[in-house]
Figure (cartoon, rainbow, N blue to C red):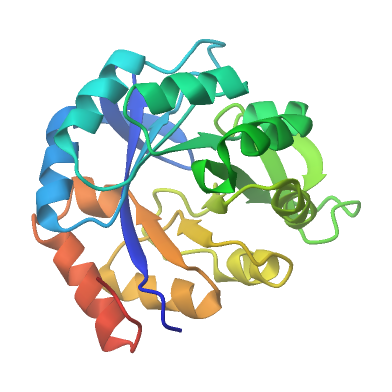
Length: 256
């Protein structure tokens, strides 16, 4: 592997504040997104992901003013998601300082929107945010189900099959969020990462479950090109990004 592994803090934003919960529930305040963005930029983060976690479930747009102020504070790529439904939404995000847009619920409802966005702006601007949970439904071959509306609604769709379709439609990256592992600090869902990696070639960002620096290398070994986390960075020591990068470096993977 020659491409450096990216370490990405995630800002889950609700009503202008960064929040964090467990399994997408029980959200608690983690601070001001602009302040945290500034901190992570200085601490060596490779990218930053900003997700308006209640935009889709509340049927509203992303908070563009907060996005703009956040973008002004960082000099690393910024991905923004939550409430993205159309190519026009992506255009507005890019005009407000985002480098990439993340789409989830709207793409599940109307997959063709992926084609519309990537044909207009290119694959490099679109990230599929895939919130998946384990299921015993025999009709879902992989055992992982796609959910929407911030993990609130099941779809009956196989997460691996959806990842493959989205990649074929042109998404540039896939942010794979494990709802079961989210906020537990028990480590990434390695089985899910391997299952998706086996079917897609686009860059894969692992998310959900990181509790300590040693949790990150196994996700990379399972197939992740980038690793994303929230709690460990928001509530951990100030040098946590450096600690995570050192753990990845010690495991033999290149980091910036």
